[in-house]
Image (cartoon, rainbow, N blue to C red; front, side, top):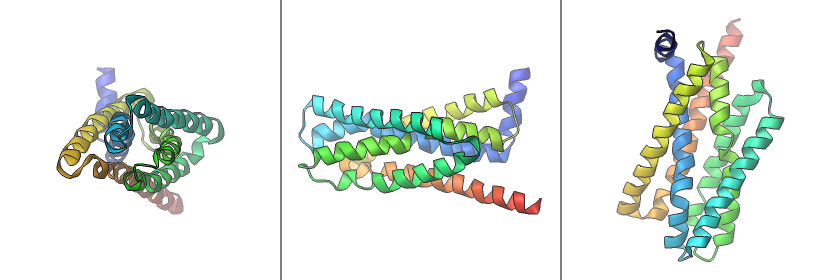
Length: 201
């Protein structure tokens, strides 16, 4: 009963759904790259499975760096700056992979590494920032937001397949910057709401 009460309290809070949507998009952008980049490298760059796996490893390595460095250096009150900044960086960087030619695979690997740096902080930072902005049980917030990120992974991985079948896998990678741009706009909107709340006080 207690756990259900915590969950019900959150789902009745409109602001919680903003962060729910942000996590859905964060999961989508991250998993589009994690799931599809190896196939993209093998099919569009005529590369080996080893090179496809190496591309995924570059992205994963960037995520490790981004998550650890942001965890050490960024304070709790600066999380909104971190998320919006990473969303802007991810949006801009995400525009380039579909535009590279087949002889630029090492440039692609570099882009994937920096995309990983931009992507890494999203999940923990959005969850932690939501705890500051939404009144409710913190454990339940982390659980429910994780439940938003995972469907985002599945939905956008599927959507990339649909777009890839219709217009080509290369064009489907534009979904990545679209996810990050939407995520940045949601957190920026909440940031504006927070500033208005502080001005009223």
